[in-house]
Length: 254
Image 1 (cartoon, rainbow, N blue to C red):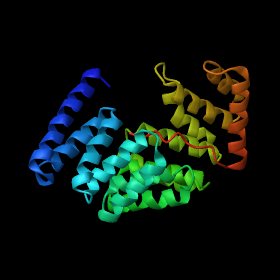
Image 2 (image 1 turned 30 degrees about the vertical axis):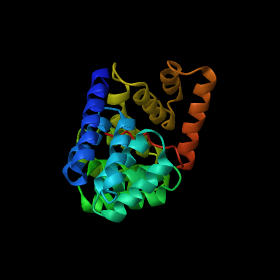
Image 3 (image 1 turned 45 degrees about the horizontal axis):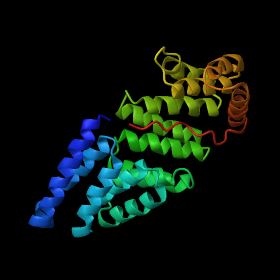
Image 4 (image 1 turned 180 degrees about the vertical axis):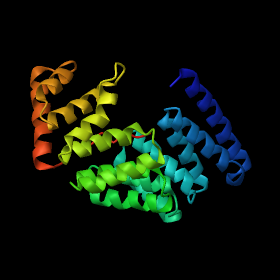
């Protein structure tokens, strides 16, 4: 995020809030929502939170503002609060796909079954929403329903063929369900690229380890991890393969 962006958003936010005091809620909520969304996109969730709270003081039924508030809280790591804000948004506007996806992400770590329901609701309303489909795959993998997860990832890729997150998640899911050859074929172009991120390299190592290629997996991991950490990672990958259990896919999100 560029420093100048935050300053510009703060200046715009101040103007909007001053206008709200003068003009009342009906004339400014749309502008304030625009400011909040821009702040969130620009990596300034605290500013987005302040903007949405200003809207909700005068327009507490504004479901779009509630959704953005939930997104801001999620970005700040306050998932418990975000969950209830998304629920409030959906009470006012059950059609909000973004709120359903946000709710699902809040639920994912502690209740993947409920998360799947939220993602399914989003996909029902927007069948080609690649984000909802990808996230639904993550929930299904956490529930150990790998074949169902793979179906969701493939639908996400049909909607957005360039979605790297769905490609990576599909590769990990295939590896967990024993299809290591296809998993490596999907994962290697991303993880072996000279410019690959640490995350993508480690995901390739996970696929290789689950396919029995421990030496190459260890070599990749050792570039970032100590010997003990490498051993622990390899053990975790092997356990996930053997039990078809909860090695959580990275859930890379756009």
